[in-house]
Image 1: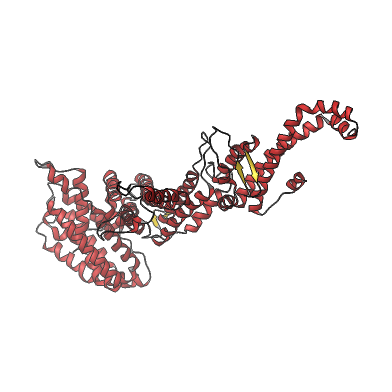
Image 2 (image 1 turned 180 degrees about the horizontal axis):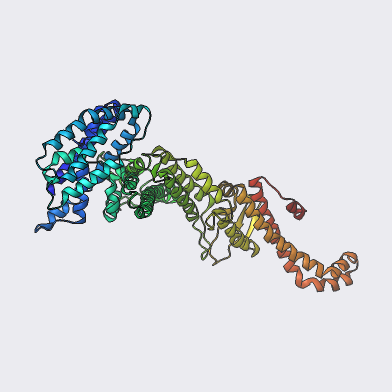
Length: 590
């Protein structure tokens, strides 16, 4: 096991260097590609992967299990698989370069070499001899003209002959043993990773191990790419397996891409939360602590020990050493590696389906951003607490700044994410049926602030152009100006947009209209008394008698009129921010 482990370590370096050379000089794929196809070098990689898979599934029974178990766990296997896939992509991309060269090589060397090997075999039963002769004739029949005519080569019969030969020569009583003819096996071996289809648990365990190991994250794209190999496991003689293998391939590649996008989303969310925390430290409300600390420092006695200074925002940017990595550094490194894998290929073809890894990430970021927006509102229906619109706007901007940097790592349209998420937050309900920022603020302004206005605890200040609280002694203080001044309303308008402001104004107008309707009912019910007061204002005795009938309603009417005026002013402020004024409001003002 240790020997195989060291061999895989060597092959990782070899394949990496080979991939870099062929990427830079694709013309070498002609002569160098034969080394991969003839498996002088490349076949050892597949042999090592196959060996590891089979021994992980059936570990050898030894006395010293500890060391063997460690050698059978290879955390660098994704890197090996990635370099194998990278070379396969190069071969497909420059297939024209290889085909012309390789067809001539097949007929000029492989067929002759295989024929000589067959003739030199000491023992060759009749069945094996027929199979080998068929393989030789198939290889000899290919020509360059087929390449020029863009003819698709069909080697299914050759592969089936090779499988038959392996079956005949692998039984214990076979006269021709493949283990004793390594050169023949190497000459005929195939390059395929479809074996992972039959090792589901090991395949998924390797994926999750790679996902948890940041140093190997950039190679994790090899796992969804390998799912495209599973189609090679099917055969016309066994059609019942086709449906099962197809469903298995599609479900696994979907799971892999979804897990990759989720991990990237979690890293981005952690970075966003940290940036929002740092942005919150820059808000004016945190300056009071620093001011009080300076004032207390002047008043304190010099002999007394001074209190430790509060860390100011920006201290985290100063580094003591270059080697010391912070948590944010590690998160950015992990994000870079994972985004490399997501951005490695725009599409992955598995059977007749096409998967786009970047779309998985875009969808997860959009859903997470929408949930984060609602979460940052911090609305608590029990305590009637909610975030100030200006503070929420600062947090949203910090969150969006981080998401914009994701475009530096992976080619996605982050503007589309912003448009989809923010536009939904201007409606009363999002696409998932959840509450939005607009609905939460509408609920708070109509149920909390407007109720306090109706109770007479808040009045409008013309000087401050905002609502101010009239808090009684012993009551819980509530600063209405923190939510109703022009700066807060502008921040609110920027957050929920014109559609959200329309929703808010319609809700407020509905409450105001209901109060006006109640006043109209009172006036209609006392119409005769009011008419008598209006027509007999010069008759004191009649006025005194009629006034007694209205004495119970005067307090109620005056209070309601005052509250309606306050509510109208609140709506006027909000409408002035949005720049609109409905006709109904003009009538009510008059």
